[in-house]
Length: 397
Image (cartoon, rainbow, N blue to C red; front, side, top):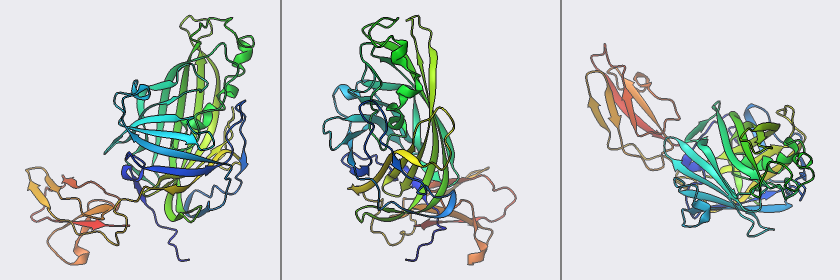
């Protein structure tokens, strides 16, 4: 098989699941048990190395359970009540437990990314199924390239039920930016909140509404590897980027009901995502949670998911090459030149070039790199030139 393993791709918001009516299914290992303890799977040697030239063969792996993710347009129901700006919901559930839904509420914003407002899950470890973030975050930016990095700082408030023993499982696995993977382990991070409560019951400052809590997720992302991924059930072999993220979850609780919150513990988890054009997060691997540091290479995963079915197609699927750019409009002003053009069919990116008069191939120089996806450009470097010619090339990787 001849594959150019040195190729690098760009993931954009169009590659993520942002359209209502789309879905995907993913194989996974068993979820945490009813005590919140992970049913881990051995993943030693599967993560690959930082940099290029990787080939991740995920055609084989755990098939203990299947998660289904459906993408839904805004509806008038209780799930959406606390999220007035959200336009799309990801509804996730284990097919072995139909109806046990979790919801991720967001809005895909061109030029920004996937703006995340919170999550909703009945029968989670919290009193309130709705968990709106204090401030929304962009979990995956509009454009993602090898070498990129970013950090999300998420905070939300809820209550721990004082008449309910133990932190149970989280809200499932999958395309939730790592939020779901640690909720099932949060009880460990809290350092035995049940013991602190005297074995359950309302003997502290908590009321029937439970003990007020603040939960904070700080997740750092780095696109540190690229190559090819092979997915199960003959879904195919695809170019991909690997995102290496470290998630730190801290819980604070108001034991006395005084409005003063005290930290109860911090839990660390490393989450890997494999991003594929037209398929978003095609695979995900999550380490076991720990109060200490998590190495890049770990032996066991609490979650290992691999997409095997979807109805989402890559943008301009079936295209062999990009159509030429048309409708190029150039406006000259005293201190800049503005270029604007029509979106070319099948184009994945554009290259804006200039020449100082010559029209041969070697006369043209780049003003943008090969991952430029906008349909406009502003050139401010125009002083000192008598002649400056422009052209825009459409490209398909």
